[in-house]
Length: 94
Length: 251
Image 1: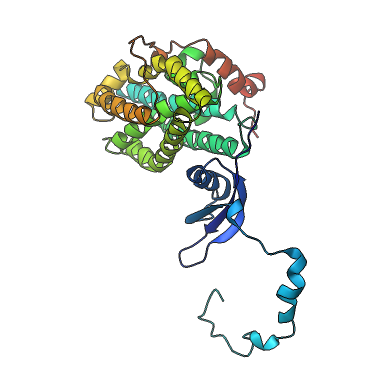
Image 2: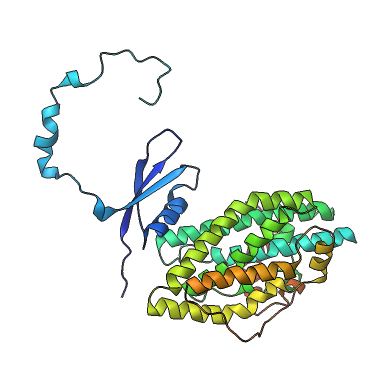
């Protein structure tokens, strides 16, 4: 009678000032355990300074069948890319 | 003479963590969940890291050319000074958690006190270990509450493990001559003082976990003087196998 623990998505911020990034998922019975597990599974090598966890069921994903109408219209609109600017060297993380 | 006492004292500190580390290491690949498996082996590695600090220092103080590995691998059973609690087997996950919890509360108080040791090296090791130990305590105490105040079965199993292990937990506080000397010299804590704080913390978390500590005061002592339960011999058989079978082997 094995009941699986729910799956959680794990987000880790590697440095102050940077954003949290999705690093993977894991099993945990509750949020506190998810944080502890994330700490043990994903930050063993000093990968992070902050962890977010969210139960996977709370994430709503876009429908792959609709990717045509969702994403393709952006293809031919190159003017939306900021490629016309010169970035100074001092600006990092862009 | 002083030197011998200091080596003895360091050995007591190191052996507790080492034997518990070995017990946790046995679970590698056998944890109840992948994530829990990693968590327990992480704790094991933390403990072995601390043990290396202790035995490197013990070898240096002794000054007879022995190394940390000699201390870890090549002593006889009665020369290991760990308390009876940490050698108890991984009967089930509840035993693993309760044993860990009983030890973590102790080690956390011990490290907090050793930070102020008059011995600089012991103080430095404590300072380095304290964050790891705080996390171990967080880990095991949340599991105590989760299981104790969880389902009927998890509660029953934790209560059973508490009933079985409590009698060994007090061995941590049975003051040996060595520890008495260390307290008098300001190297380590007075274990009787530590004990009242310990009982307070354990009781607090057990209350939250709806777990009761056994009322009878029947305790078993002797680990720190080298009188062990049947289990230590088996642990050492595994632990020392390579060095006994292939002396001086390296990898």
